[in-house]
Length: 235
Image 1 (cartoon, rainbow, N blue to C red):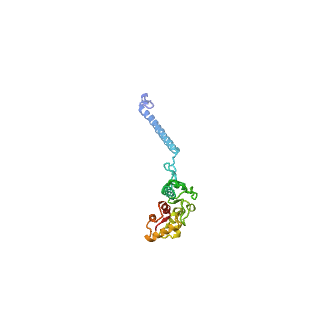
Image 2 (cartoon, rainbow, N blue to C red):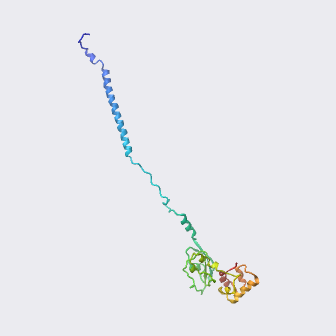
Image 3 (tube, one colour):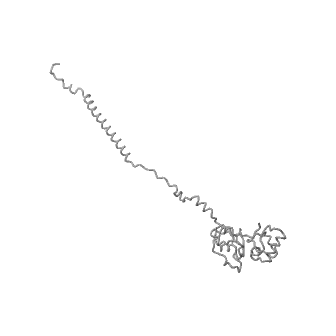
Protein backbone atom coordinates (compact mmCIF):
# COMPACT_ATOMS: atom_id res chain seq x y z
CA UNK A 1 0.00 0.00 0.00
CA UNK A 2 1.17 3.39 -0.75
CA UNK A 3 2.05 5.87 1.89
CA UNK A 4 -0.79 8.34 2.44
CA UNK A 5 -3.34 6.20 0.75
CA UNK A 6 -6.70 5.86 2.65
CA UNK A 7 -8.34 2.66 3.58
CA UNK A 8 -11.34 1.77 1.72
CA UNK A 9 -14.64 2.90 3.18
CA UNK A 10 -15.62 -0.66 3.91
CA UNK A 11 -12.82 -0.81 6.51
CA UNK A 12 -14.45 1.98 8.61
CA UNK A 13 -17.56 -0.12 9.27
CA UNK A 14 -15.86 -3.44 9.00
CA UNK A 15 -16.09 -4.14 12.75
CA UNK A 16 -19.63 -3.32 13.81
CA UNK A 17 -19.71 -6.11 16.50
CA UNK A 18 -16.86 -4.50 18.38
CA UNK A 19 -18.66 -1.16 18.54
CA UNK A 20 -21.90 -2.77 19.77
CA UNK A 21 -20.05 -4.76 22.39
CA UNK A 22 -18.39 -1.62 23.73
CA UNK A 23 -21.73 0.20 23.94
CA UNK A 24 -23.47 -2.77 25.63
CA UNK A 25 -20.67 -3.11 28.18
CA UNK A 26 -21.12 0.49 29.21
CA UNK A 27 -24.89 0.14 29.52
CA UNK A 28 -24.63 -3.10 31.46
CA UNK A 29 -22.39 -1.43 34.06
CA UNK A 30 -24.92 1.30 34.51
CA UNK A 31 -27.67 -1.26 35.05
CA UNK A 32 -25.65 -3.05 37.74
CA UNK A 33 -24.99 0.21 39.57
CA UNK A 34 -28.64 1.27 39.40
CA UNK A 35 -29.78 -2.16 40.58
CA UNK A 36 -27.41 -1.98 43.53
CA UNK A 37 -28.67 1.43 44.51
CA UNK A 38 -32.27 0.24 44.32
CA UNK A 39 -31.45 -2.77 46.52
CA UNK A 40 -29.83 -0.52 49.14
CA UNK A 41 -32.85 1.78 49.05
CA UNK A 42 -35.24 -1.15 49.61
CA UNK A 43 -33.17 -2.47 52.53
CA UNK A 44 -33.01 0.99 54.13
CA UNK A 45 -36.76 1.46 53.81
CA UNK A 46 -37.37 -1.93 55.42
CA UNK A 47 -35.14 -1.07 58.38
CA UNK A 48 -36.95 2.23 58.87
CA UNK A 49 -40.34 0.49 58.79
CA UNK A 50 -39.24 -2.05 61.40
CA UNK A 51 -37.93 0.67 63.71
CA UNK A 52 -41.11 2.72 63.39
CA UNK A 53 -43.36 -0.28 64.17
CA UNK A 54 -44.92 -0.01 67.74
CA UNK A 55 -43.82 -2.63 70.27
CA UNK A 56 -46.68 -4.36 72.14
CA UNK A 57 -46.02 -4.48 75.87
CA UNK A 58 -47.16 -7.40 78.04
CA UNK A 59 -50.28 -7.01 80.16
CA UNK A 60 -49.61 -6.14 83.83
CA UNK A 61 -49.89 -9.09 86.26
CA UNK A 62 -53.28 -9.58 87.89
CA UNK A 63 -53.23 -8.69 91.63
CA UNK A 64 -53.59 -11.64 93.98
CA UNK A 65 -56.68 -10.18 95.66
CA UNK A 66 -58.73 -9.66 92.49
CA UNK A 67 -62.06 -11.39 91.93
CA UNK A 68 -61.73 -14.78 90.21
CA UNK A 69 -64.54 -16.07 88.01
CA UNK A 70 -66.95 -13.47 89.39
CA UNK A 71 -66.63 -14.70 92.99
CA UNK A 72 -65.08 -12.60 95.76
CA UNK A 73 -62.00 -13.98 97.45
CA UNK A 74 -62.86 -15.24 100.95
CA UNK A 75 -60.18 -15.46 103.60
CA UNK A 76 -59.87 -18.66 105.71
CA UNK A 77 -60.61 -16.63 108.87
CA UNK A 78 -63.91 -15.38 107.44
CA UNK A 79 -64.88 -18.91 106.37
CA UNK A 80 -64.11 -20.30 109.82
CA UNK A 81 -66.15 -17.57 111.49
CA UNK A 82 -69.13 -18.20 109.20
CA UNK A 83 -69.01 -21.95 109.78
CA UNK A 84 -68.79 -21.56 113.58
CA UNK A 85 -72.23 -19.85 113.75
CA UNK A 86 -74.96 -22.54 113.93
CA UNK A 87 -77.81 -22.19 111.46
CA UNK A 88 -80.24 -23.81 113.92
CA UNK A 89 -80.66 -23.58 117.70
CA UNK A 90 -81.45 -26.46 120.04
CA UNK A 91 -83.34 -25.18 123.09
CA UNK A 92 -84.89 -27.00 126.05
CA UNK A 93 -88.27 -25.55 127.04
CA UNK A 94 -89.45 -26.71 130.46
CA UNK A 95 -92.17 -25.78 132.90
CA UNK A 96 -95.78 -24.90 132.29
CA UNK A 97 -96.08 -25.31 128.53
CA UNK A 98 -98.23 -27.71 126.55
CA UNK A 99 -95.34 -29.67 125.04
CA UNK A 100 -92.23 -29.34 127.21
CA UNK A 101 -89.03 -30.68 125.74
CA UNK A 102 -86.32 -29.89 123.19
CA UNK A 103 -87.21 -27.73 120.21
CA UNK A 104 -85.20 -26.81 117.11
CA UNK A 105 -85.37 -23.19 116.01
CA UNK A 106 -83.78 -21.02 113.35
CA UNK A 107 -80.74 -18.96 114.28
CA UNK A 108 -81.83 -15.60 115.66
CA UNK A 109 -84.98 -16.97 117.32
CA UNK A 110 -86.24 -15.41 120.55
CA UNK A 111 -87.83 -16.71 123.74
CA UNK A 112 -91.34 -16.22 122.39
CA UNK A 113 -90.46 -18.50 119.46
CA UNK A 114 -89.36 -21.25 121.86
CA UNK A 115 -92.57 -20.94 123.88
CA UNK A 116 -94.67 -21.08 120.71
CA UNK A 117 -92.76 -24.13 119.43
CA UNK A 118 -93.64 -25.89 122.69
CA UNK A 119 -97.35 -25.37 122.15
CA UNK A 120 -97.60 -22.18 124.17
CA UNK A 121 -97.95 -21.62 127.90
CA UNK A 122 -100.68 -23.29 129.93
CA UNK A 123 -103.79 -21.34 130.85
CA UNK A 124 -103.28 -18.87 133.66
CA UNK A 125 -99.46 -18.91 133.48
CA UNK A 126 -97.95 -15.46 133.94
CA UNK A 127 -95.29 -14.79 131.30
CA UNK A 128 -94.43 -11.40 132.76
CA UNK A 129 -91.29 -12.79 134.37
CA UNK A 130 -89.92 -13.86 130.98
CA UNK A 131 -88.27 -11.53 128.50
CA UNK A 132 -90.04 -12.87 125.44
CA UNK A 133 -87.96 -10.65 123.13
CA UNK A 134 -84.58 -11.98 124.32
CA UNK A 135 -82.48 -13.73 121.62
CA UNK A 136 -81.85 -17.39 122.37
CA UNK A 137 -78.50 -19.14 122.64
CA UNK A 138 -77.85 -22.64 121.37
CA UNK A 139 -78.17 -25.22 124.15
CA UNK A 140 -79.92 -23.03 126.71
CA UNK A 141 -83.00 -23.81 128.77
CA UNK A 142 -86.16 -21.71 128.95
CA UNK A 143 -88.20 -22.08 132.14
CA UNK A 144 -91.85 -21.10 131.80
CA UNK A 145 -93.95 -20.40 134.89
CA UNK A 146 -91.48 -21.87 137.38
CA UNK A 147 -88.89 -20.29 139.63
CA UNK A 148 -85.22 -20.80 138.68
CA UNK A 149 -83.32 -23.10 141.04
CA UNK A 150 -81.16 -21.58 143.79
CA UNK A 151 -77.93 -20.12 142.51
CA UNK A 152 -79.01 -20.15 138.87
CA UNK A 153 -77.90 -17.22 136.73
CA UNK A 154 -80.81 -15.71 134.82
CA UNK A 155 -80.22 -15.90 131.04
CA UNK A 156 -81.03 -12.20 130.70
CA UNK A 157 -78.19 -11.31 133.06
CA UNK A 158 -75.70 -13.64 131.44
CA UNK A 159 -76.49 -12.49 127.91
CA UNK A 160 -77.27 -14.65 124.88
CA UNK A 161 -74.50 -16.84 123.61
CA UNK A 162 -72.32 -16.51 126.71
CA UNK A 163 -71.10 -19.61 128.59
CA UNK A 164 -73.17 -18.61 131.63
CA UNK A 165 -76.35 -18.39 129.58
CA UNK A 166 -75.76 -21.70 127.79
CA UNK A 167 -74.73 -23.62 130.90
CA UNK A 168 -76.56 -21.85 133.73
CA UNK A 169 -79.32 -24.42 133.96
CA UNK A 170 -76.93 -27.39 133.76
CA UNK A 171 -74.56 -25.92 136.36
CA UNK A 172 -77.32 -25.01 138.82
CA UNK A 173 -79.21 -28.31 138.83
CA UNK A 174 -79.94 -29.67 142.29
CA UNK A 175 -78.42 -33.07 143.04
CA UNK A 176 -81.12 -35.31 144.51
CA UNK A 177 -78.51 -37.38 146.34
CA UNK A 178 -76.89 -34.50 148.24
CA UNK A 179 -79.70 -31.94 148.52
CA UNK A 180 -80.75 -30.90 152.02
CA UNK A 181 -84.35 -30.48 153.12
CA UNK A 182 -84.01 -26.69 152.80
CA UNK A 183 -82.70 -27.01 149.26
CA UNK A 184 -85.48 -29.42 148.27
CA UNK A 185 -88.08 -26.96 149.57
CA UNK A 186 -86.72 -24.36 147.11
CA UNK A 187 -87.96 -26.50 144.22
CA UNK A 188 -91.29 -25.43 142.65
CA UNK A 189 -94.26 -27.12 144.30
CA UNK A 190 -92.15 -28.80 147.00
CA UNK A 191 -93.01 -27.98 150.61
CA UNK A 192 -91.67 -29.37 153.89
CA UNK A 193 -93.81 -32.53 153.66
CA UNK A 194 -92.78 -33.46 150.11
CA UNK A 195 -89.15 -32.57 150.80
CA UNK A 196 -89.17 -34.99 153.74
CA UNK A 197 -90.69 -37.73 151.56
CA UNK A 198 -87.91 -37.29 149.00
CA UNK A 199 -85.32 -37.49 151.75
CA UNK A 200 -86.99 -40.58 153.24
CA UNK A 201 -87.11 -42.28 149.84
CA UNK A 202 -83.40 -41.68 149.46
CA UNK A 203 -82.75 -43.15 152.90
CA UNK A 204 -84.96 -46.22 152.35
CA UNK A 205 -83.92 -47.09 148.77
CA UNK A 206 -80.38 -45.77 148.63
CA UNK A 207 -79.07 -43.17 146.22
CA UNK A 208 -81.14 -42.04 143.27
CA UNK A 209 -79.88 -43.67 140.08
CA UNK A 210 -82.00 -41.49 137.76
CA UNK A 211 -84.30 -38.50 137.95
CA UNK A 212 -87.20 -40.68 136.79
CA UNK A 213 -87.24 -42.34 140.23
CA UNK A 214 -88.93 -39.20 141.58
CA UNK A 215 -92.15 -40.63 140.15
CA UNK A 216 -92.00 -43.31 142.86
CA UNK A 217 -92.11 -40.71 145.65
CA UNK A 218 -95.58 -40.35 147.12
CA UNK A 219 -97.17 -37.05 146.14
CA UNK A 220 -95.25 -36.56 142.89
CA UNK A 221 -97.49 -37.03 139.88
CA UNK A 222 -96.74 -36.51 136.22
CA UNK A 223 -97.57 -32.80 136.34
CA UNK A 224 -95.28 -32.10 139.31
CA UNK A 225 -92.59 -34.37 137.88
CA UNK A 226 -92.56 -32.36 134.63
CA UNK A 227 -91.92 -29.24 136.74
CA UNK A 228 -89.13 -30.85 138.78
CA UNK A 229 -87.33 -32.79 136.07
CA UNK A 230 -85.51 -29.81 134.45
CA UNK A 231 -84.43 -28.55 137.89
CA UNK A 232 -82.76 -31.61 139.37
CA UNK A 233 -80.05 -34.08 138.45
CA UNK A 234 -78.37 -37.23 139.77
CA UNK A 235 -74.60 -37.36 140.18
